[in-house]
Image (tube, rainbow, N blue to C red; front, top):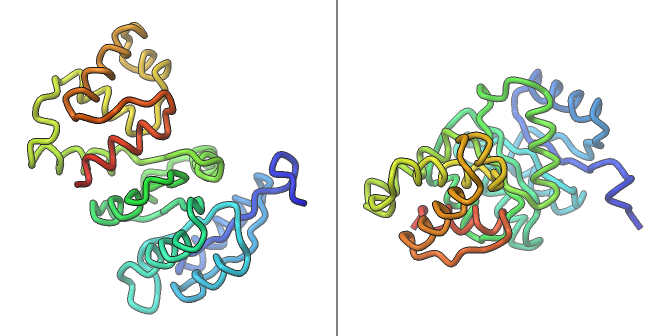
Amino acid sequence: MRDPLRDPLRVVLAEDLFLLRDGLIRTLQDHGCEVVAAVDNGPALLRALREREPDVAVVDIRLPPGFTDEGLRAALEARRSRPALPVLVLSQYVDQLYAQELLADGDGAIGYLLKDRVTHTDQFVDAVRTVAGGGTVMDPQVIAKLLARGDARGTTAELTPREHEVLRLMAEGRSNAAITHTLHIGESAVAKHTASIFAKLRIEASADDNRRVLAVLAYLKR
């Protein structure tokens, strides 16, 4: 039986650009991960996810043959047969619909990073490990798009500027302690803002950070 604490993290990688795919393979291997499959198209990704049963999938959205949403559709199809399969999207595009569909089932273990905003190896590897562990990792630009879409419909119109800041950090997966450090405010203030946000958005608060993030994002996607 596999021991997740001792055995290498098993990764399926989907990227159509050879040089980038090769670089990602080397990066993952250098940090103790086992790349059990590295593919360059949507159908091959779906087969790999079903047959290799990885701990996490790192996928580009747009893959051959159509270069539309093959990567995401393969990941979502795999999650239907294996709920909460950890998926980290690594894309060059910010697309609200992709992010919303990825978050729709509410099972967690998801991430969405932008290729040109991953600036160091540890950032990428930490994201892979966080998603594999059931966490949520979202690029701030993706979060900003979701929040902006919510504002356009009035879903966050009642929030104060400070509550917007707290909500953005919550949606990035930050803990209350991390928000306290980032905004230079007290923990009691963060707790007060958090309670106010959930009250205004009519979302039941949760002690679990990941569930809290997913609840906020799920609300904003509606």
